[in-house]
Length: 398
Ligand SMILES: *Cc1c(COP(=O)(O)O)cnc(C)c1O
Image 1 (cartoon, rainbow, N blue to C red):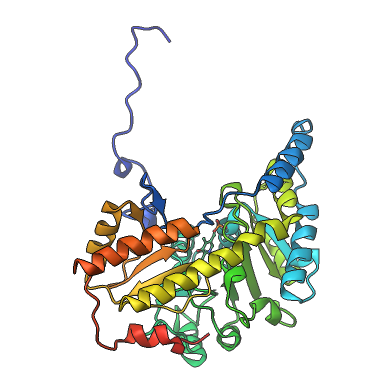
Image 2 (tube, rainbow, N blue to C red):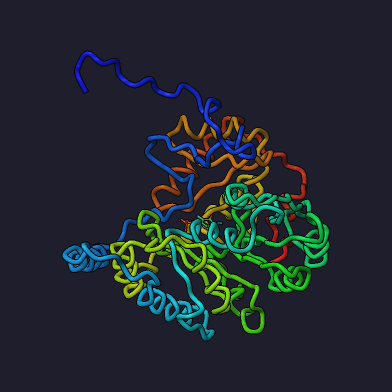
C-alpha cells in the first residue's frame, strides 16, 4: 500500500451491518468495571491464588509449552477425570469421567447445552431474578426465552415451577435453567424444585451450581439427582470457589449420553493445552485453593448479620455474596458507596444491592461505608416488616 492511498473507511455503525434481526437492539453483557479500591461487584474470589498453587500452575504450563506445536487433547480426558474425582470427593456421590464435560468457563458449557438442546423453534425458561447470562446465551443460540417468575420473597415452589415449565412456549420449555445457589439472590434451592421441573419437561434441566462450594451446611447438590435422570445437568465452575476466574474453566456433570451430545457442537480443540494444564494443576491442589472458602463464608455471614443490625434486609445466602434489601433508593446508595471507594452491583431489583463477600478488609470497608450512609440518613431503611425481612429471617425455601 502506498502512503498516498487514503486509509480504509471504517464501518460507522453496527446498524449498517447485516446483523441477525433477533440480535438488533440487544446490548452485550457487562458489569461496569471501574477502577476503585474495593471491588465487590462481580462475585470473584477476592483472595489471590496461593503462592504454592501458583508455582504448581506455572510448572505445569512450562511443561506444556514445548509441545504447543500439537493440538491439545480434544476431549480433555485427564482434566475430566480429575474434575470427576473432585466432584465425587466433595459431594460424596459416585461420578465417572464420562459424566463430566469441561469448557472455557461454565458460560461455554451453557452455550454448548443450548446449541445441542435449544435453537430455533425451541424455548428456554429461567426464573427471574437470576443469572443474566442465561437469557443472553439463550438468545445467541436462537432459542426463545421465557422469563419465569418467583414468589414475592424470591422463593421457588416446585408446583409453581412445574406449571411455568409446562406452559412455556408451544408445548413446554425445552431447556429449564435453575440456579442454586441463585445469583443475585444468594439462596440455594430445595431439590424437590429440581425434581418437579424435571418431571414437567421432556427437555433438559440445567442446575447452575456456580456457587455450590459456599452453600450452608446441609445444602444438597443436584448431583444427587443425576442417577436415573439422563436429561438433568449440573454445571459448576472454577471461577468462584477455586479463585480461578481468569483461567476460564467450567464443567458439568450429567449422563454420559448427554456429554456425547455436546461433542456434536463443541469447537474442535476448544480447551487449550494451557487451560487444561493450569486447571489440572489447580484441581490437584483443591484443598489449598478452597481454604479461602471458609474465610469468604465468614465474611458473607458477617455482611448478613451487620446489615440486618443496620435495619436493612439481607437475603439468606448460600453464596459468596449477599443481596441486601431494605434500601430506600438503591441507585443512590450504589453511587454513595462508589463515592466512598466501594463498588457493588445494582442488579436492578428496587431497594436492593448485591455485594460480594471480599477479604476481611474489603468487607470492613463496605460495612463502614454503609454504616456512614445509614448514619447520615442517605440510605434510609424502610423499617417496617417487609417481604424482604421475612426472607432475611430464613423463610426463603432452600
Ligand atoms: C459467576 C457465575 C458463573 C461463572 O461463569 P464462568 O463462565 O464459569 O466464569 C456461572 N453461573 C453463575 C450463576 C454465575 O454467577
